[in-house]
Amino acid sequence: MDWTIKTFDELTAREIYEILKSRAEIFVKEQRIIYVDQDDVDYRSWHIFATENGRVCAYMRAFKEGEDTVKIGRVLTLVHGKGIGTRLMKYAIDELKPKCRKIIMDAQKHAVPFYQRLGFRTTSEEYLEEGIPHFDMELEFS
Image 1 (spheres, one colour):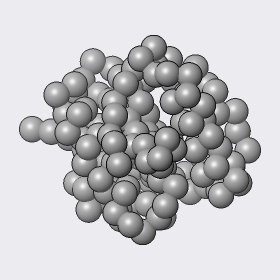
Image 2: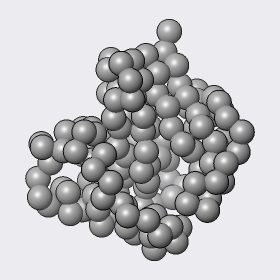
Image 3: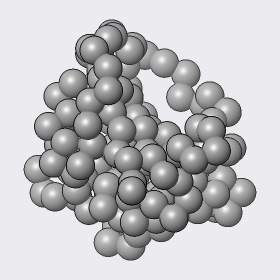
Image 4: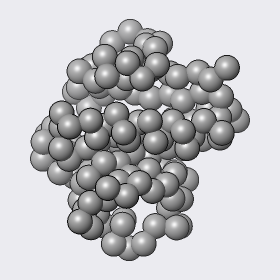
């Protein structure tokens, strides 16, 4: 598994296609979220992903949200329960830590314990986003 972080302009056409294909597979097909994925945030994001046999199998995007904060989203793995999500998050934290003092996210409720094990803390009450319960979470660096 090869891990990569790139800006949008550094991505190849094939990487963009594979990223969008994986995002659709998880968020539209698996989670049945009906939304417009292409929201222009990708243009200003770092794209953090792993490929295996040419396929994007783990992915997230991260972007500046203020001067010292990075927001992550679109977090996914194609295979669940194999530790790939933990590897993705640890790689992303290592890459993003020099770029900010805090990482924030809108986490799906079922994933909150996973993010807590990585040091994130809940910073909001439960709310609905695209019909799915979420919590705001953050990881602050000293």
